[in-house]
Amino acid sequence: MSKPTRRLVIVVRADPVICGHSGEARNLAEAALSRGFDDVRIVTWPIEQLQRSGLPLKPLESVLPYSEGITVERPAPVGDYKIPDGRYLAGMVGRLVELFTDGVPTVAMSLYLTPHATAISEALSVARRTGLPVKVTSIAEAVGSDITNVVRSCVDEGNFGAAAQVFANYLSHNVCVAVSDYTKRLIVEAAEAIDTAQGTMFASQCQDRVTVSYPAIDSSVFTEITDNEIESALEKRDLERGNYVLFLSRQTKAKGVDDLIDGFCRSKASATSKLVLGGTGPDSESFRKQASESAAADRIVFFDDIDDTEKRLLMAGAGAYALPSKPRPEFTETFGIALVEKMLAGGGPVITTTTGGIPEAVGDAALIVEAGSPNSIASAIDDAMLYMSAEELKAFESQAKAHALQFDRINVFDQLFDNVLVPN
Image (cartoon, rainbow, N blue to C red; front, side, top):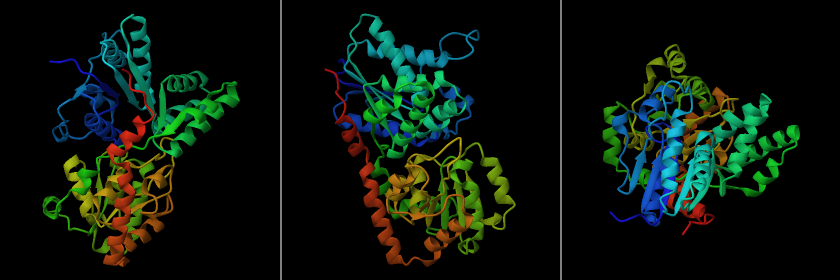
């Protein structure tokens, strides 16, 4: 087998994790093949570790295969029980060192700064000390939880060292990107707080160096859907086309699921339609209890086994797709990949809020509700399901698709790599 000429390595929480950024990694990997990379590797966590982590996961049998030329690697941990933590990260770093020192020109990209950008930085440091040829350009992509879940908590708790480690590591990469303008603003604001408290100079560097690269989505998966496919999927779930409101994301309070349940129950549409709550998450059980005690208990259904193929069909068949996210200390929506996927799939309108980076995802092509307001959600559900004419719905669908196509994976990949110097 001939030696590859250009390699892309993506370090991420990949499938089977239910997360838009695991899908983004897949899409960047597939786009790289069409743009001349002949060796693409996704370096991620062993399945057993993901299962222990508590992360929401798809059924393993539902994970779609990757194209030939894409290799998913799950390095084993290094050491035994005497090492209480860091064993899996050590395994990942070790494998990256091997990839970085075999002489192949490589672009290494991390999705999530903690710990994936750290793994790349450490591996590059080790690789350069081996004396072997290292031809690597690194990209670090910051997502919302990097700031809301890691840096912000460091700032709030006065944990200067940990926050400094995140920023210094981020800025050590050749290219620094954020998934939205909103995310970049969060990054700069958090850096300013550290600078003010400690006299560092992270904020100006972040302002100057961080650019925006929106999540990459395979638009063809969502736009090339037949009516027969939709009807077959709905029949299996006992759903009627256009007569259900769909939520399909991680089931957490930050996603506004509690408000959606209340809002659906207050809507007139709930008398004749269903609310479908798809996905899993840490708050699933509390939402099931809330739904079972609601006035529309017999019309609210939960599906925790939706795979990627079925997802797009349920999106296309929905009368509305609701993601009423609200800002919470543990998470704020910094883009909204599922919203873009729904707009590409067609069907009824998206119902969402202006939380975080959502406006960048939906533009003017969504029904906007007040975050944390069940009454506002109820009104939007009735507009989508009862009051909008067929012509209005069709125009809304066309506008949504036109806006969402800008996030197609080839377009996003090309714009990102316009700013990346691929090593020779």
